[in-house]
Length: 320
Image (cartoon, rainbow, N blue to C red; front, side):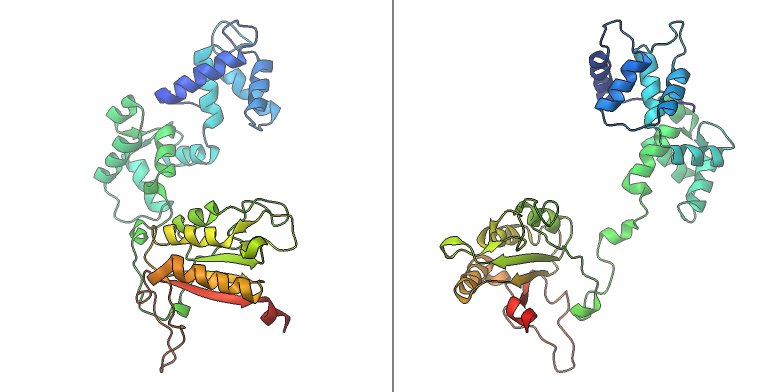
């Protein structure tokens, strides 16, 4: 596999130099195949041994056969980090050249990315923006690094950029929409032994979730807690969860947030929960007992902007 124009950022080169020095166990300023194998194991890079040997041999081009100097190690790194799927696409659309010219890129964008009305000017803009090799830029071509940079960027995302902004009708009844929801929001890992963290509520709300789960149980000293019942998961205070939700609910979006509360608490601690909801959330808490209007329609997301809704499933109800 050709590495094309060797174009590594200064940050990557600095890291490679440090990594190369640490891997050079005998201090001879080169890496043997054994030292490379040890390095890959340390970095948790799981490649077939035969594949590593093949790339090692291709990178080993100087007179000191059987060992990689730093420049050769950089070439080895390039081979190892090149995405095979993108490399094969480049070959397919370039008639087996090591780059895409503007015409090749246009065919790729129209065929693979389903873009329409792709102009040569637009292709040259992509090359100038994403191609790190100055020689390739001057020639108006996109090498494998440029292709990789483009495909990893938002510009190459399958997601329609128009949808970063709200593009749907948000005046329909709330039940007409799919809602991004989080299950066992408080857990960092598995449902048996992992940690419960209030940070998880901040994370999922900022990631775009509009419905979060809060499993509530009686805690000590009259303080309701949140955790996965009958397991070894750790416990967090309900009050801390509501304070975090209050802080992060509308950073990502103004549309309503739904608290899906699974209630296992006694009546005294339920009253404490209600106290925290009203005191902490204040005007954000929707208290109108949402139900369908005379025409059978629920309120819309647009009407409920900036509001936090509470949906409760009670243990008593589930046992009934």
